[in-house]
Image (cartoon, rainbow, N blue to C red; front, side, top):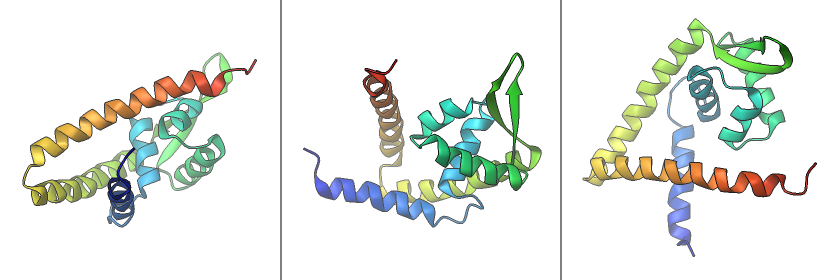
Length: 144
């Protein structure tokens, strides 16, 4: 079983990221980063971000209203909607990249072993992808 103190550290990190003055909340940043990587379908974005579709829709609505993103329907299937960055969204992500990157760099410097920490973060990211992949079939089991 995981050490509860380790879990607490992860939660502290998440809360600390919420306080970084990046111009975007962590949720907005995550959505814009993934949308900027290729106009993901809304359903796929919700899955990758581990949020409910209504939550994604509400955040996407606010990003569209702020002029940071736009929705585009899929040619041939109007039910499929993809989120894309606007020019302002691309600029906002670039500013947030710097702010979040500087925060993480400082944190890594303070550990005295930043290269290992960054490598471990990439390994954790891959493990999270695997957890989502393994969990996905179980979540849809028994559904028509």
